[in-house]
Image 1 (cartoon, rainbow, N blue to C red):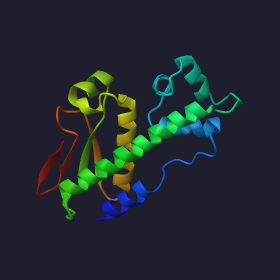
Image 2: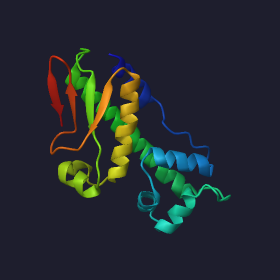
Image 3: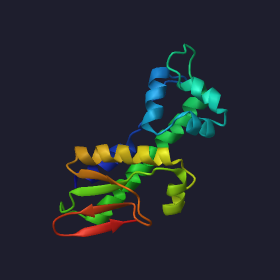
Image 4: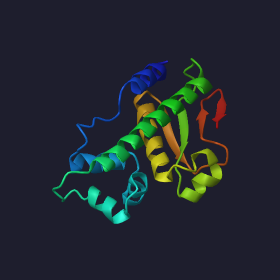
Length: 171
């Protein structure tokens, strides 16, 4: 199955490219957005005040992004890579070697409380980060011929795989 090859390629490669410990602010801001980091989430991950994290995301500043901010970002990118690879493994396990499943339904979390209530094992991760992981996963799935729809989360259901001949719930 194509997703198996894609998963192996993705998991074998690094999703980030840090040159030393500094990074251009535009690149930093774009990559933060891709992993779901706003100033609040970044401040928590880097252990600094929200105002300090906000300044790191300000693309109009000329100073380099500090190493601890780059480190927090690369940890988030590693988490995203791990999450996406695990989800691809789960999809492969649920669909087997068949091409029956063509539509996947992914949750979009509206708050930290909702994520904690419906998905307790993810409660330590910010809901924006989980949403960004699902967006990254959706891009990979769409590129590989799957249709992706978004749904309000349901208790105990991570996503739903459907086809004309079967429905499987994955939790």
